Image (cartoon, rainbow, N blue to C red; front, side):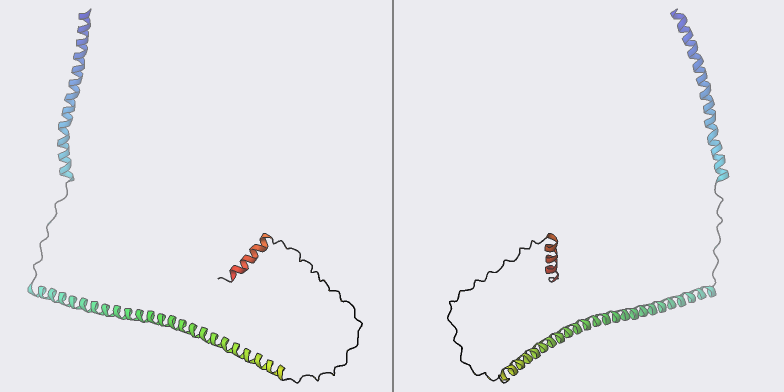
Amino acid sequence: MNESNDTIFESKLNEFDSVDNESSKSNETETTDEPERESEIEQTVSEPKKTIKKKKVLTEEHKAKLKENLKRGREKSIETRRRNRELKALEKEEKMKEQDEKLLKALEKKRNKKTNEDSLLSQIEELKRQLQEKDKKQLKTIDEEPKAQPKPKSQPKAQPKTELKPKVIVKQPKPIQVETQAQKNKRLYNMMKGLR
């Protein structure tokens, strides 16, 4: 039985090999055809050849004209650059002048503010001085006013002597006020306002 199994196995193997060989032959033919097709495709698709244009032969007159145009163009570009440079310089000067004017205005405001403060302080001092002079004048006039004629002293009436008892004045204590948190906060707020 082993022999029969071996022969069957070999026959199957041979069949498989034959099928495998046929497929590999067909693959070989396909691979050999592919490069031929690719080369045909490449030839048909390849870029068209560029035509080389011949350079124009320049005559002496034409060369001279081109040189003259270049010379004029250079002169014109130099002139425009110079003009633009001058314009930029003028704009820069104007901008600097504007900035200087702003600085001067700011300085004048500061000076005016100082002079205003100084003038206000001097006015306050002047008013204080005038107030003191006025108070002095009022005191002098009060002192100088003629005193009312003193009344003739009448002789005191004799009063019976009584023992005087010292009066005891008892002050009533002020009620204690308990300050709430809101009142404390308000008081602190008012005190802090003055520090700003």
